[in-house]
Length: 239
Ligand code: PXP
Image (cartoon, rainbow, N blue to C red):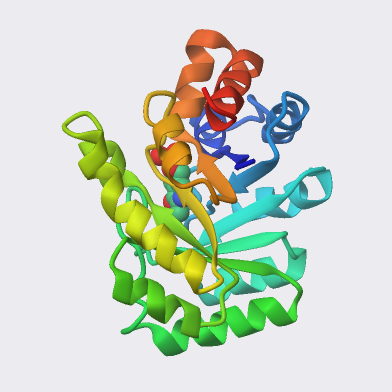
C-alpha cells in the first residue's frame, strides 16, 4: 500500500507566527504517527519561514516512522542531512526565495550535481529521491544519478484534475511506468488532496509514498487531525 508521509511545514508556519512553541511540531508529528501516518516530511528553506534547520535535528530522534527531508542541495542543507541522517532525502531544485516547489529537476543540465549529491547521501546510508516532472527524458536521466527513487511533481495533475481527470493522469502513468521499468521507486507530491488522491493512486498502483502538507493540514482545521489522517489513509487504500 502507498504510504502517507505528512508534510508538517504548515504547522511550523503557524508556530512561527507567534514566536513561541505553539503548536509544538514534535507533538504534532507524534500525533500524525499515532493516527496512522507512515512518515513525516519537512522542507527547511533558507529563510526558515516554516521548518527551521534546528527543528530537523530535534525531529529526527523523535520520529518513530520515517523522516523525509526535502530541499535544494546547498552546502548548509547537505551538512544538516549528513549529520542527522534522515531515512530519505528528497532533492528539490527550488531557488532560495521560492514560495513553494514549482518544478522538477532538469536531470540533464544538473547531471553532475545530482550524481555527486546522490553518491554523498547514499554513502551516509540515506535513501535518495529526486523531485521530477513527467518528461520521460528527465526520468531516464534520473536513473543515471544513482537515485533509488523519484518524486513525481503532481501540481499539473491537481490543476487539470477537474477539467479532465483521464487526461490529467495520462502523463503521470507514462512517467511512472518508465520509472518502474528502470527500477526507480516512485513517490509523489504537491497539491494532492482528498478529491484527487484516490484516482492518482488507483492509476499508479506501484506508488511507494505520497507526501501531503497543505491540503491535509487545512482539512485538519475542519475535521480534526485524527479524522483527517484517517480520511487520507482511506483514499490511499481504495477510497
Ligand atoms: N513534495 C515537495 C518536493 C514539496 O516541496 C512539497 C511542498 O512543500 C510537497 C511535496 C507537498 O505539497 P503540498 O503541501 O501541496 O501537499
